[in-house]
Length: 475
Image 1 (cartoon, rainbow, N blue to C red):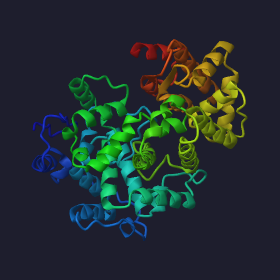
Image 2: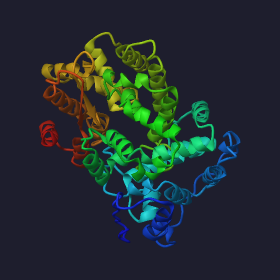
Image 3: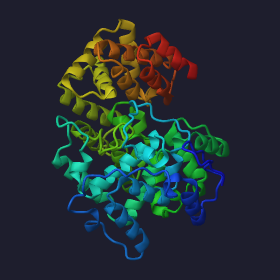
Image 4: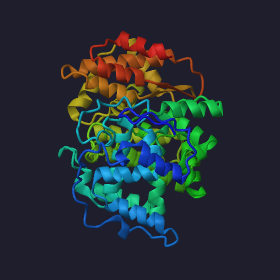
């Protein structure tokens, strides 16, 4: 295997047959973190809680090797050593240091606590996000509330009661070390669809064009599982549960932030209870680590308002057996409208609730800015937004604006002044894009706003028309 021994390392992930010997050689010979050189002093975490997860996990005596790894991992307090353990056990984690389509959400900080920077001498956004999610899972399993919430503002900090609820739910799903291993594997492979050469290879071999990184992962797992070792070594039980959830083409995060459509709920109704539970736990920790590239210490995102929204979302989708997709969706929107203190009787009021959710804003002054920005739009722009946000992908064709929340947030955070004007600009762009796709007669069309989310982050003064033209270049 040919690998450059530099900070910017390239790895053709399909050039190697991944047997245990090759994985060992790769760890020892290819990555500076494992040669004993180029490692900076480790980041220390806050001390673990007094009650560790092993006291609650059912131990399978027939798989002592798995038990030993999970035990050692949960008790390792050094973040860098934990990462080294994971890299050896789940080699796909290293692939995230390749050329990736990184998330456009938020500006990556130059925080010196970045695990990837310690290991590789360079910051890798998706690696840090994945590691943060895993660390958050570890904190919860170890009953370490202080570490989980260490970077959160007191005003919105996750409460001890909600942390305990999250932990109890997690332990109700991850009952054994094998369950934890499957969850770690699931978390590590989750963003393989963002790796450019991975996507190129799976699309080429399968002859299928992926609409997003989740579909790219699904194609890879179905058509070439042997080339994804952490997935391939899982038992049939866990493989089926992971595939079952991915095949449903549903993203709980998109549901909670009103990014997806009612039609996205249709196939999720047929997901098995076991697969649904594994998916939900995986998603919660994916969300917990989503800002790991900004602050790797605890969960910057899984605050009390966000946690409560996800619990409301889970409560709503659990009503699928007795309600239609539209009823489930509006049940969730009504819960949020009540939280915001807003009515939701008309299409306009419903659109405003959806825009608040898409904006991921929770402070009262921010909610006022959203409503004010909408009211200042011209009539045609308002109508385009209301129409685009009302289509469900079932009775009429609709458009899923992938990364719309990232685009709105990046626009809102681009400048300190005149927040209403910033939101108005973002809404104008969304209205133009909805109008572009109004001819979609049936089903759900997914369009990515990653390019304009990145553009506004890097060039805050871009105007509405300029952002729209950047979007048009891709489509």
